[in-house]
Length: 70
Image 1 (cartoon, one colour):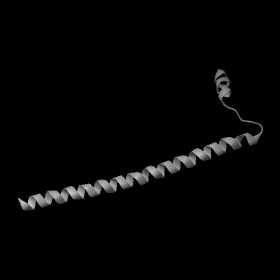
Image 2 (cartoon, rainbow, N blue to C red; image 1 turned 60 degrees about the vertical axis):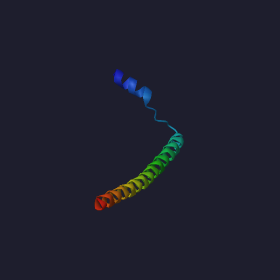
Image 3 (cartoon, rainbow, N blue to C red; image 1 turned 90 degrees about the horizontal axis):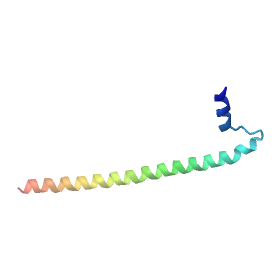
Image 4 (cartoon, one colour; image 1 turned 180 degrees about the vertical axis):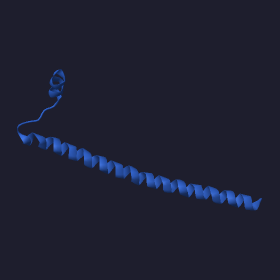
């Protein structure tokens, strides 16, 4: 019985359903922000991976050139 009392302190279901609107808007804003942030991180990550690949190819080319000259 005391469990329900404790749980009921944290749960609030308003009679007026318009009170859900600000919470829904806030959740939507944060969801959109999270999606945009994730897309930005992926975009930057792809650029960094491409740079790393180019550097690796440049190093391998230099190593091959030095091995051929030896």
